[in-house]
Image (cartoon, rainbow over all chains, first blue to last red; front, side, top):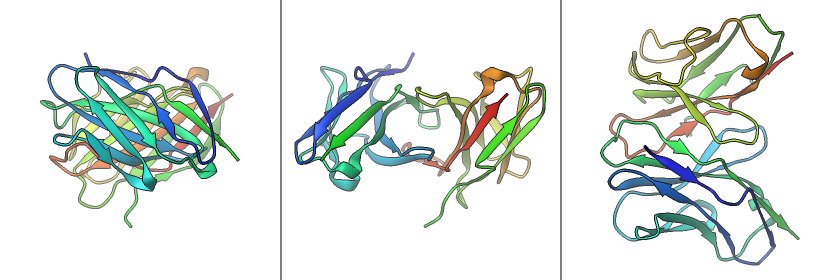
Length: 115
Length: 114
């Protein structure tokens, strides 16, 4: 069965510092991996995805994520955090063989960036 | 930029009442999803449509929930009767057929059951 774990409910960083939001996954075979962001009372917005190829994926708003197959991780990173990055972040996985299938989401990590 | 439209944005109802949510996906997107997001948790799939056909409704509480996408375009999710535990955000998403997984979400419909 597919699953996603986000071990931190909340991450706090100071503006200008680098940020990391952690994600580990479990799936049979090769995964499709995604990060989404959610602002209060809004829908989810796509940030980036890993399908195949380079393990470092670049996405929207300066975010990037690193796929590590041996550690089954897909951590979200940004070199310099902004206050406007404060939001709820979700990691999601889909098994490669199940291209029409559903995304399984983690429970979310609340990112708080202080001035 | 095309968006997924959902209505209503907010709905307050009393338990045992009926409630319905509507979703209009991005034009040309064959796959439509309804997710439920309980406060503090990640979204969970309720039902997935490919055109007008249900692909996955394994997590849909069929005794009280129903969903349809009659013409393969817009969709309606209904709850009858509503229960206190149904209070959540109901998210609709769509994707292109055969896409590598990127879902486009609507703004959601927040349901409060009193």
